[in-house]
Image (cartoon, rainbow, N blue to C red; front, side, top):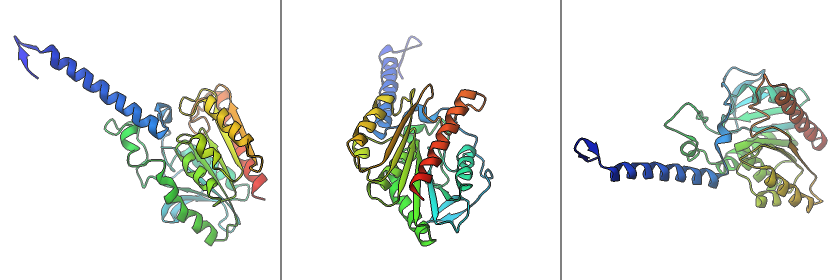
Length: 273
């Protein structure tokens, strides 16, 4: 920066502001392209590698939280949001599903590198370049094969936020029997149009990532596919992440999350019997 009479030249100051504005604009464009947003980062969980009733071991090549009977022929795969598989609420939900006679697998799709909202050097647009939602599908295929090899003949998958893309791809290729996605991100109308197995979509009225209008479009597309059993619900007065990152001190938020959890379990009970 050049100085004249002890003051910085205004042209360079202006250039700096423009540069910052361009950088912010570029980040917004990148997040829009990936179908992600600031709401994906809200109310981050306190990760705990020791949380849950299950245990962690390698499964399908990935470190995974495993819970439930490994001898069950019914398995559920959880694909997490950007905060990964050590989130206590996610594991608690996995335990609840496992208690209904399922073997539940929650893989670490981020290889020990979940999003850290306190890392100012790696905001979401930077972090997601190493973990784009499209990468989940290739990583999940060995997990599905491992489930089948251990005797699982009925497999479902639930994708939360980031994980929605992965479970939608599984649904397109009929690699499993049923899917649920809650407050999805990174999926399009074309993705939903490609779904060929039963799907439940749990949206949020106040979601800025996948807004109510888009969820309604998903419902319209599925209505034109009567051979695909579908269920679409928009939960009122809740925001993106409401099933996993809700305010535990807000009775209404807790109520909405519990209702969504029960719908998820009921959906799998219906289609994996």
